[in-house]
Amino acid sequence: MATACWLYYRLRRSAGRGISLIALVCFWIGYEYLHQTWDLNFPWMTLGNGFAITHQWIQWYEYTGVYGGTVWIWTINILLFLIYIGLREGQHQTLRLKLISAFVIVLVLPLSFSLYRYYSYKEQNNPSNIVVVQPNIDPYAKESTIPAYQQLSILTHLSDSLGQHNTEFFLWPETAIADQVDEAKIRNNTYFLQAQHFLSKYKNGNIITGAETYKIYNKQATPTAIYDSQNRIYFDNFNAALNIENSAEVQFYHKSKLVPGAESLPFGSALSFLKPVFEHLGGATGSYGSQDEPGVFYSQSGIGVVPVICYETIWGEWIAGSVHKGAQFIAIITNDGWWENTTGKDQHLDYAKLRAIETRRWVCRSANTGISAFINQRGDIVQHSQWWVRTALKQDINLNSDLTFYVLHGDYIAKIGSLLALLGIVFVGVRVVRK
Image (cartoon, rainbow, N blue to C red; front, side):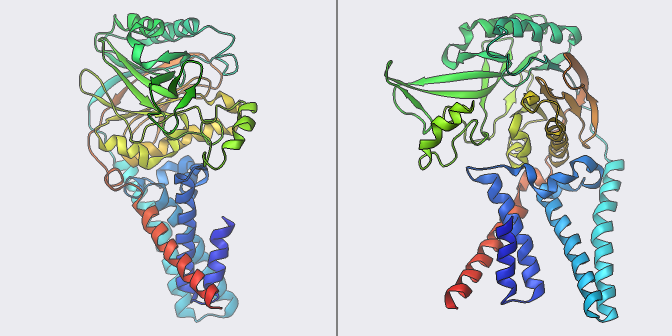
C-alpha cells in the first residue's frame, strides 16, 4: 500500500497532477491485483469488497467485478481532494463548479443505475431444490475426538430431516469426510458407501462434500508431490470437494486457492527452510496439491455447479471461470470455526454476495461451524443459520445459464490497471536513473 503512494509521489515530482492521480489509481489496482495473484495472495482487503454490506449499491459488479468498486472509491476521493485543493488555492469558480458537478455525477449515476437494476432485476423461473447442512462440529475436535463415521451419521441425519423426493443437491461442508481418502479407491471407501447408501432414497440426489483426499504416483507427477522414502512412492494431499451420486461416477475438485502458510508455502523453492516453522504452528505447509483450472460438477440431470472451498470465495475471476464453463449455481463449502465468534465469519459470508452479483447465480453455502446460507442472484441473503448451531436449511433456487459481462471478460479492469502501473513504474525508474 505504501509503495503505491510512494510511486505516486515520485511521479508527481516530474509530471502533472492529473496524470499522477490517474497513475495513483493504477498503482493501487496493480497492488491489489498482485496481492490476488502472487504466492502471498490475500485479496481479502481489496477496496471493492467493502461494498459487500451494501450490495444494493453495486449491482453493476456484473460488468466490472470488485475492481470497479476500487476505481469508484478512488475516483470519488480524488474528486473530493481536488475540490478541497481548489478551495484552499482560490481556484477559479468555473473549474470548481466543474469538479463539483463531476463529483455528483460520479457518485449519483452508478448508485442510481445500481438501485434501478436491483429493484427491476427478475430471475428466470428454473427451480432446483437444495439442502445445505451445518453439522457444527468443533474444528479442533474434528480429526481427533469424533470418529469420521459418526460425523457422517450427523450429516445424513440432518440431510434426511429436510430432504424431499425432488431434492437435487445436498451440500456438506469443507472436510466433512474427516478421514484420509484414496481417490483411486474411492468406490470401495467406507465413507463413500455410507454417503451413497443415504442417497439411495433420493433418485436425482447428489452430495457435494468436502474431504481430505490423496493421490499416489510412481514418479513426481506434480511440483507439490511429496516423496515417501519408506514406500518409495510420491503422493499429493488435497483439500477436495466431491460430487457423489447414485452411480459409480465420482467427480473431484481440488482446492486451488490455498491459504499461504497454512496450506501452501509461499515461494516454496526459496523459503523451504521455513516448513518446520509452519508445521509447528499447526499448518500443513507444502502438503497440499491443487488444480490449475476452475472446476464444474455436473449432476446426472445436467445441472452445472461451481464447487468453491472456503478461501476461494474471494476470487471473483476464478469463480467466473467455472460459470463460463456451464455452472448454473455456486456451492460454497467452508469451515469458518477457526475464527471462532469474530467478524471473520460474517465478512466471509458477505463476500459471497459479491460472487452472486458478478455471475448472477444463486449461492448455496454450507459451513461446518460458521454461517450457512442461501443468497439469490441480486445478492440478498434469503436464509441463513445462526453461529454455532447444528442445523440444515432447504431452499428452491433458480438456476441461471446466462453469462454476465464480468463472467465473459473477468478482471479486465485489474489487468489494464496493472499494465498502466508497470508503464508508470518504468517511467519513474528511468527518471530516477537519469537523475
